[in-house]
Image (cartoon, rainbow, N blue to C red; front, side, top):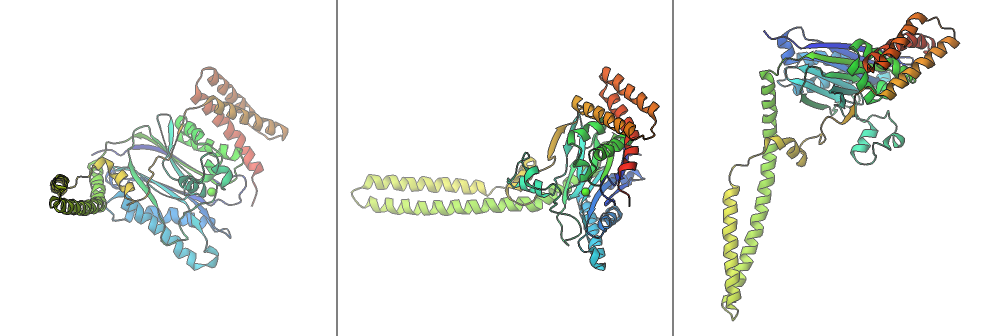
Amino acid sequence: MSAQPVVQYASLTDVGMRRSANQDSLAVRLCKEYSEWVEMGHLFVVADGMGGHSVGDLASRITVETLPLAFVKSNAETPSGRLDEAFAAANRAIGDKARENPEFADMGTTCSTLSLSGNGAWIGHVGDSRIYRIRNDVIEQLTFDHSLQWEMMRQGHASAENSESLHPRNVITRCLGPDKNVEIDIEGPFDVRSGDRFVLCSDGLTGHVTDSEIGAIVDVLPVDDASRLLIDLANFRGGSDNTTVVIAVVEEYPPITALTVESQAAQIARMDKEVVPAIRQTQRTLRAKRTRLATALFGVLAFTGLTLLMTEYKSLGLSLVSGALILGFVQLIISTQGSATVEVDKANRPAKLAQLGAREPVELSPYRRESAEVRTEFLDLLARAHSELTTAATDNGWKLDTVKLTQLAQMATAAGKDCSSGGNLSAYAAALRILMKEFTTRMRPRG
Ligand code: CA
């Protein structure tokens, strides 16, 4: 009996420093049995709700309750089919609820879902919450933001540099709820290796913490400390929105199972069904055009040549007739070869697919890549945050565990001297936890 993967995870959601309610929701569903894991895998979900009259949390709550259940109950044979059905079920459930009460009418939610199974990692995604993978000191964004900024960049109307100033960050172009038919990005399988770290988060995190900072923190700290520091950092920098973080660290991953092969075979079969006929049709159309052109040319050459043979320009006529005969011969050879079976290069299928416009997305994951190394500038920044918060604590007479804080500051300095970025980050994370706990309690709006 094979063993399940060893996955450590942590999940946290926080209201932030400005909002009075938390509209984010999350769910984690771990498989109990190996066979269950092979088929459907551990599931991680983050949803960021929106809507007036304080019902924003309703759509995200319905999603995290409906989606995992529908995912497990699905009879689909492939992970993509399973995700498809689960997202459709969540979308229906929100729509049904919205019709019950006019106040619920405009509610919606983003949803990013990760399945870690015997089929590798699969992602279902709509909206601007994100899924990242951290591997070998690099953080990769595996999801495409369905935001005005990203859509404008995709269409070439904005660049990474100016999109921030041209378009507001928080306008999303797709979400669950408002429309009966919503397009979901389903991508996979991504291979999974021991040591991989996955992060799911709402835009409350990515609005304040950069990709490389997320990468460094998650790469170095244990999952609980990392999730805590990410939220503390977002709140320290303003906490303008609700923040949700789910981290999954793969300590050991069993080898790919036979199901993966089946799943890939199913995908290839689907591609064969959709793509190969399309390519054949294109080739048939091209061949027919070429044949018509060659026949017309053959006719003109032969007719003109034969006519000239009866005049004084016999040699020119002979040349034209020979040309017509050669053309006819060449066309005969081409048409014989063209009737052979069309072979489609399997490796190039996604490209062929895109080329034929047969299926979106043309662009494939990962969408962004950054270094996840712990940079000195980032450690300096944490040191400054520590010092600013300590000054605020002293000025305002907060009662803090000053002995512990001094100890942590000394640990951070010692780690800095030893060039231990992990130790340094770890000490600052613990110190910021003590300080931010006090800071958020005092500064958060009540109600
Ligand atoms: Ca949000």
